[in-house]
Structure formats: C-alpha cells, structure tokens
Length: 125
Image (spheres, rainbow, N blue to C red):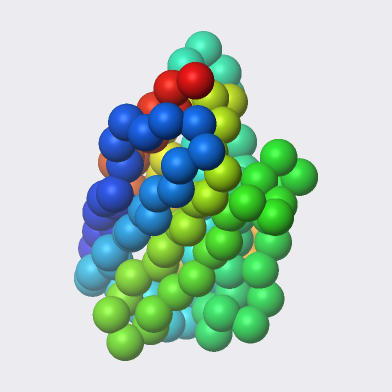
C-alpha cells in the first residue's frame, strides 16, 4: 500500500518562500511520475506541477510557472515543491500524488492513483 505524507506547509507572508516535501513508502516510487495539486477554500482541486520518474521532464500550471519548482530524490523516496514569490492566491491545501507505476507526467487528477492527506499553505498579504 502506497503512503504519501506531505510536510512543510505553514503561514507565510506574500513574497516569502516555502518548500514542501512528500515522502513516499510502500510502493515503487522510482518508477512513478509524481504530481502536486492544490485546493483553495471553496474551489476545486487544481494541478500545480508534475515530474517524470527520473526527474528529467517537468510540467507546471501557468499560475505557478517561473515561481515554483518540482524536484525529486529517488534515493530518499521524496518529491519536493519549492515555492518562491508566494502570493495570497497560492493559499490552499497542497497534495502530492503518485501515478502508481506510470512514468509519464500528467496534469489530470484521474491519472493519479495515490494521494497524500495534504499540507496547508497560507499566504498573508
């Protein structure tokens, strides 16, 4: 059973940076593409970033491109989301997701088989 545990969320001010981590266990992390999604209060969950199994291919939503960076360390079974120049509009619960053995990246929720419980990020103005 794959387990994903996010950490690193918190309360920051606009312009600050945060790094989220997602530790995976119980699966084949190194063979799976991984993604980050977020859900703001009162809104549907949306795609943020994705990374291929070896880290060579990444994809970002337009709203975070140039500010966020996704990376992974397969030796540590961990995927990261470095978030810079945070804005109040980035306030959300952030979820990491595992493509369950599929190595190609995707921005679609239904392509991901496993999800973490989320970590909350609040950006004040």
